[in-house]
Image 1 (spheres, rainbow, N blue to C red):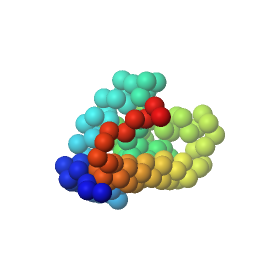
Image 2 (spheres, rainbow, N blue to C red):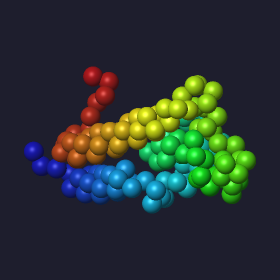
Image 3 (spheres, one colour):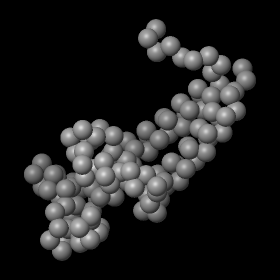
Amino acid sequence: MRPNYIKLVFGGLLSLYFLWIAYDPMQGSFLDLVDLPIHETGHLLFRPFGVLNIWVYAADAVVMQLVLTSGLTGSEGCFHDWNYMLTRLGLISSTKMVAGIIRAIGTLTIIAAAIGSIYYSFMSEPVDLDQ
């Protein structure tokens, strides 16, 4: 079986890029420019489609040191979504665990997407998902 080299290269490069983000999400990425407007305007509509570095925001729920869209941190009096949610759910003492689960799910999603993109680059015909 011969791969579609365009799909293989594209899938491989994107896989490396997203694994790089998974390794060090504090470096930021072009996806942050997409994530922020989606987050701020689409809490209900887009909540299943979070981005990996959401774990960083969740992990900040106790110390509230990240600079938010207001330019202030949560500890300076700005509203912090994750502090509010985890407090209301009674999980504020489990912040590290919740953030770790979010990071693990995001990283596993990236790995599954990488495997899928490389696998499908070897398929010569379109896949019929209805069968």
